[in-house]
Length: 103
Image (cartoon, rainbow, N blue to C red; front, top):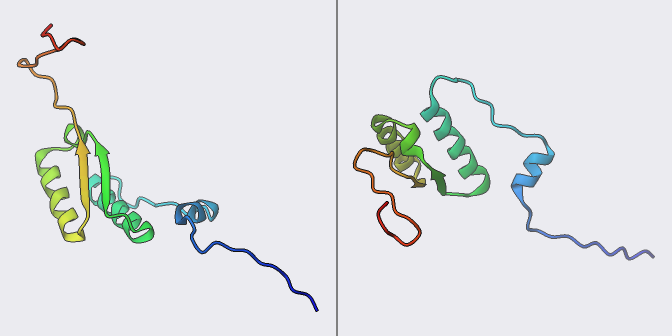
């Protein structure tokens, strides 16, 4: 009689499995960034259970209308985007040195 010992871990990383299977997100329409970005975030949310996404500088690459559309899409999908942005420099910009003195 053979009594094999089998060990396993129920927890797994879906992203590693998808990478192993060479699963890729295919962009079908290159002229609509908001739609593609929304579909991508929705897919990630459904596959990995992530509902909060962190981005950097969306307001520097998207117009106000695009940001409004993206906001509405995220609300419909019950997803949240936290965007860290640096405002574009203007003539009213103040530059500070390491001692917080105006240069």
